[in-house]
Length: 212
Picture (cartoon, rainbow, N blue to C red):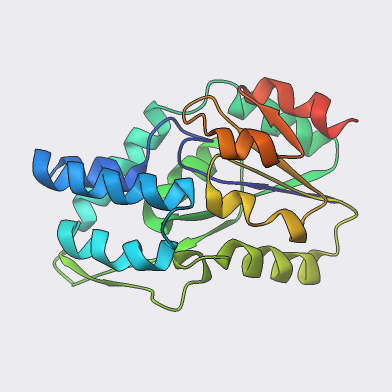
C-alpha cells in the first residue's frame, strides 16, 4: 500500500474555502482574509498567526459552510476523480490533509472517492451559529501536516508516502514524505516550483510522476 496525501484548496478544487466564506462578509473582510491567506500560503507568516484571526473576522455559520462544500464540488479539479480512481486501483490510498474545514471538505472527498479527511472541525451552536474551531487540530498550525502524516505513516505503514499541494504548509511536509509534488494549476508559487521534488499543473500528470 502507498499513501497519497492531497491538499484540498487550490489543489483538489480551484477555490480557497476560507476566501469564499470571507466573500460573504463583504469586500473589506474578503480583502483582509485573502491577504492573510496569501501570506500564510506563501510562507511569509506562520499559519497559526492567521488561522484564528480569519475565523474571528468571518464567524461562518453551518449553512454558509455547507454552501462552500457545494462550491468545492462545483469547482473540482477536472482530472481529480478519474486520476484518483486509477491510482486507487494501482494500490494508492488517498487522504485529504488540509488546513481547511472538515465539514466543508468531506462532501468533496466523498465525491472523489476519498474515504479519509484530516482537517479542522468548526464548532457551531445548536442553531448553526459559529462558536469556535478545534484548536487542538494539528493542521491549524505550522508543520501540522507533518504531524498528521507522521501519524498516518505509523498507522498505515505505507511503502511510499507522497504529498500533493500548492502551498507552504504542503512544502513543509518534504522531510516526512518520500516525494512532495507541487501543484500549480490554480496558485503558481515560484517557491513551491523551485523546491518541489516534482511539479505539475494538472492532476492528469500525477500518475506519470508517481510511476517514476
